[in-house]
Amino acid sequence: MKRILIIQTAFIGDVILITPLIRSTKELYPQAEIDVLTLPSTASLLQNNPHVNRVYCYNKRQKGSFFKILRTLRERRYDMAISPHSSTRSHLLMYLAGVPHRLGFDRGAARILLTAKIKHPRGIHKSQKNLALLSLISKREFSHQTELFPSSRDIEAVRNMLVPLRGKRLIVLAPGSVWGTKCWPIEYYSQICVMLDELGFGLILSGSPAEKDKCDQILEACPNALSLCGKTDLLESAAAIAEAELIICNDSGALHIANAMKTPVVAFFGPTVLSIGYYPFREGDYVFETQLECRPCGSHGPQVCPKKHHDCMRMIKPETVIEYLKKRIL
Figure (tube, helix red, strand yellow):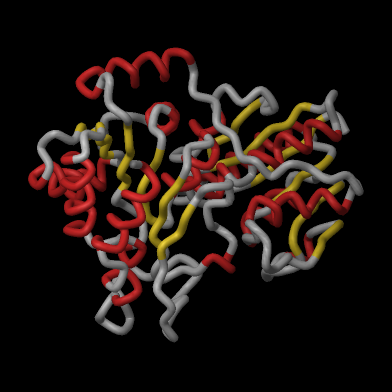
């Protein structure tokens, strides 16, 4: 195996969760070049990764992009391709690119295009599910610890941003998510932020530009917090989270960034449940959730609560969270 392609064209968390697969594939084939195909919005997550030779960006929404990336993959003449993402387009790309060994899960409409496949595992973390694909070629066991590699420039830039909080114990709050129902109410986040500020903690608000309104609402309640929302790229966000002793967040990309940087996680799970496999997995991580018959309401969670009450999140009261945090951090 001289050239191997790994495909993951889903969300931030999904790309972070293939980093153990990338590392382990390199361990199996140390002389091989490992290339990864991602979306333009997530490609930067793999910058500085020592196990990755090249990252290709595939803009699925751009007209003609499929055939453009297909030509590139054909020219690379891959010996093997692995697709943890069970999408028809991903399987088609591997097949039409002429890759002789095509590994994936035995699900989806295009699974017939795979040359080797396994049943999609249940009851384990998603990063472990991804690693299970390697059981098709090896009996070895691998670590499922995720990883990101902010550069020294990323770290320096973030530390300069954090100068106003120098000397304080740092906690990150990441109130956003791509999915509306995954978000714990912003007024609850504000209450937590005020409490932590009163206890003397340095508070960092983290999020994408699309989540700036949420962070601004928290800032109104807690002006002493420092918002990096929309001011950092993905690896700078990772560097900022690494500086903190804790992150408080939803079931979102921030959770997976924190796990990769080995920062303890306190997370809120509402429309999704742990058994889907995207939970924080490190020792000391903690998940707040409420047991309701309507959970889960999807693998991601819709933008609006189907029951119109959003009780899965609203019933996780800030008072309960504050009580837990005081026991943990004081």
